[in-house]
Image (cartoon, rainbow, N blue to C red):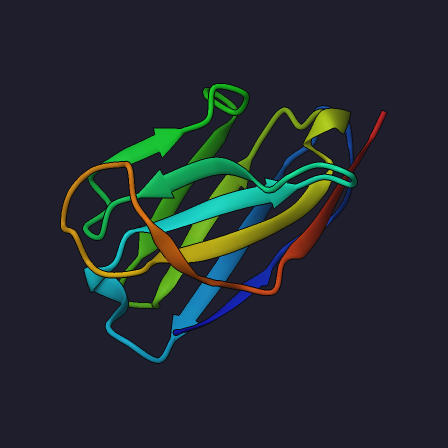
Length: 123
């Protein structure tokens, strides 16, 4: 599967961004999707995931109540709405697709990754 992330940019603390990730190459609606982030000098971290149907979501504690993951299976796209952004949210954000469909809730094994989109939050 090919994943193309977009929507990153520079925003002030307290602002919002919406990231998008369009998938192609296989049946999108069979696979859970996720978002991860990687800040400079740090390991890639889990941000949020969404089940194949969209009815089950899971978030890292650091983004609960601020970020919302969603998907539009008709458009082969997964989103993450990021509100109340903080400087510590600054990172490259990656979308990922489940390796094999499990049709279940989190946790998932992600095997396909997009190229990343930079999010920078200024204080």
